[in-house]
Length: 125
Image 1 (cartoon, rainbow, N blue to C red):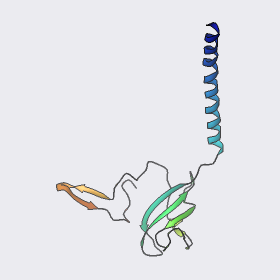
Image 2: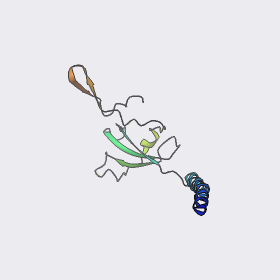
Image 3: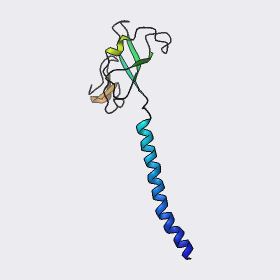
């Protein structure tokens, strides 16, 4: 019985130390491994193609502007972007709450629905 109690006390001392060690290693790894860029989708009137396009930008964490264009609907194959990607300079990247919760429509009085234009900025922008 005394051996069982001794094993229980040792386990109570060692298990928390092991958990603290594992959490510490995970925190160190999180600080060392670089963060992946965010993928941000924006819809706007492209000044070069003169069309409303939807563009997926890659934005590194903390960067003021996107670093790359992942896809653009101005092209037949949106993943093959062949332009100089000047639109990256038009987009400001800011970190905050997601805007994806705002629908493109609004329910108004009497059960009617009104639609926002695709090129119109989302609320709070």
